Image (cartoon, rainbow, N blue to C red):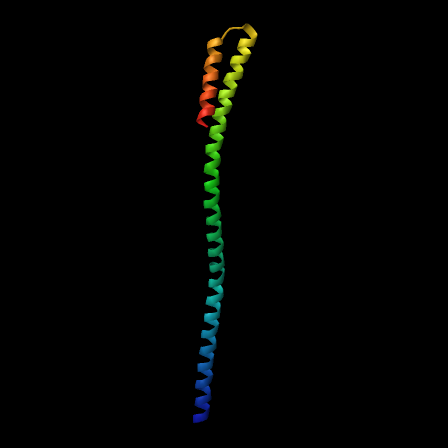
Length: 107
């Protein structure tokens, strides 16, 4: 082989290796891209979850407060019904009134 043929062969091999390396870098970047996009989506979803947890905790407290008010109201209605039926239970009515006033003043 002549010197020119060796140079052409070596340059061909170098270009082939560079081409393969370029393809490797391209594939590596393309493979990383979905992970970057998914990480951003995960970060946004985590922020949404934190916000919703805060809203839910406030709702739980409000529901517990409403349940307490409903219980007191039902006790008062029961005392009124009992009093309307037989005319007794004055002490129960006073107790229900006291509970309702306490609940309303605490609010």
